[in-house]
Amino acid sequence: MSLLIYEVSAADVPLELLLLADPSEDKVRSYLFTSKCFVASRGGYVVGACVVRPLGEGAHELMSIAVQPAHQKTGCGTALLQWVIAFFHKSGASRIEVGTGTFGYQLAFYQRHGFRVTGIDRDFFVNHYPEPIFEDGIQLFDMLRLKLEYPGSAA
Ligand SMILES: CC(C)(COP(=O)(O)OP(=O)(O)OC[C@H]1O[C@@H](n2cnc3c(N)ncnc32)[C@H](O)[C@@H]1OP(=O)(O)O)[C@@H](O)C(=O)NCCC(=O)NCCS
Image (cartoon, rainbow, N blue to C red; front, side, top):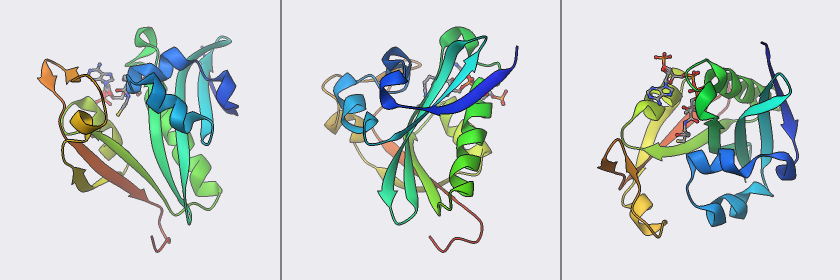
């Protein structure tokens, strides 16, 4: 079944999907309504979502990307990320930034699409979340900052 990707209003993004990428509902709500939102749907059912916040001067930050667990590892996330990267390129953006954990498949996922590591936000996950976050049994402490620069931009 083919995948349809399109922009939607913040109110039309399933929150439970975004909570897969960011466990803090307060945090998600703090950026959702000032961001651009995109969904991927299959057979009329939303299976993926991506939220991108403007940072100013042509820069944007990918705040969240998530795919329903039953649809993960079927190419939805890749298709959605590629679509969003192309969308902002066409709109004249200079770069997209993203923050993620220091380990795990998500790091490879972004780098496969051209994101490069630019820095480390030490203790980010400890300082910004009330509860410890674990992935694969390992506690997340630091956030890696990555950036995708569009060719020709001076960002
Ligand atoms: C990250 C995410 C959006 C990727 O979406 P997806 O539809 O699974 O992605 P794809 O099917 O296009 O797969 C992309 C790659 O990630 C890998 N991958 C996806 N889920 C994985 C998992 N749970 N464990 C290990 N690898 C995984 C795939 O195997 C694939 O790698 P490959 O190209 O070497 O085969 C999705 O896994 C997700 O929603 N994860 C939970 C939320 C999250 O962590 N979001 C990112 C926050 S930083």
